[in-house]
Amino acid sequence: MVNKKQGIHVLVADDHILFRMGIESILKKTKLVNSITHAENGDEVLKFFKKKKFNLVFMDIMMPEMDGISTTKKT
Image (tube, rainbow, N blue to C red; front, side, top):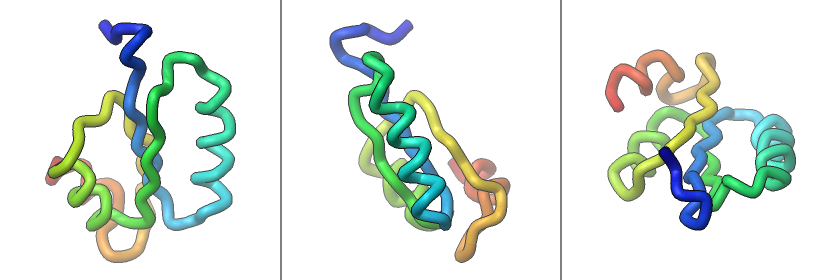
């Protein structure tokens, strides 16, 4: 269970910035969300996973560099 004071860390992975910003605007209205990180492709996702743990990931399955399915298998 997530401590409400600590909040959750979210990663939004999509190659379309408008989609990422839209998801972020919705998540910002949720008091449980502590941080939102953006990634444009699977390679960026893997780099972020080396530095930080995320409680929730929104992953596009069709991205350049590495698609969401391949990325998910590597995490």
